Length: 79
Image 1 (cartoon, one colour):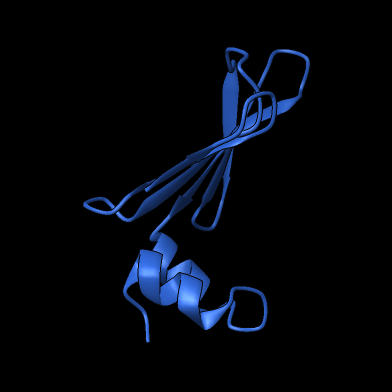
Image 2 (image 1 turned 30 degrees about the horizontal axis):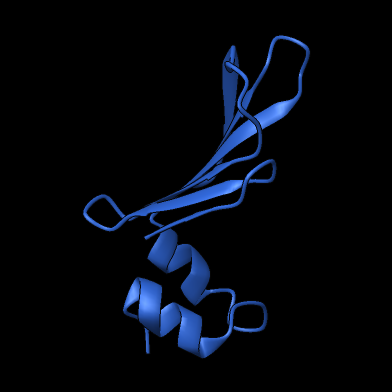
């Protein structure tokens, strides 16, 4: 799925790879840092512009209190 609002952020889920990409700005990134299954891409000035959540379905399965069950079922095939 893909969700985009002009001037805000862009969400894109790649179901084949189970990766959720959150683009927060239309700026080129210079470097990235990884913490667990989350990769954050930054501009040269240190502004985060892209976030990747690897194994997104597992990540959101752990977040039962935050993500409504209906959304998880629809987008991540989680009961």
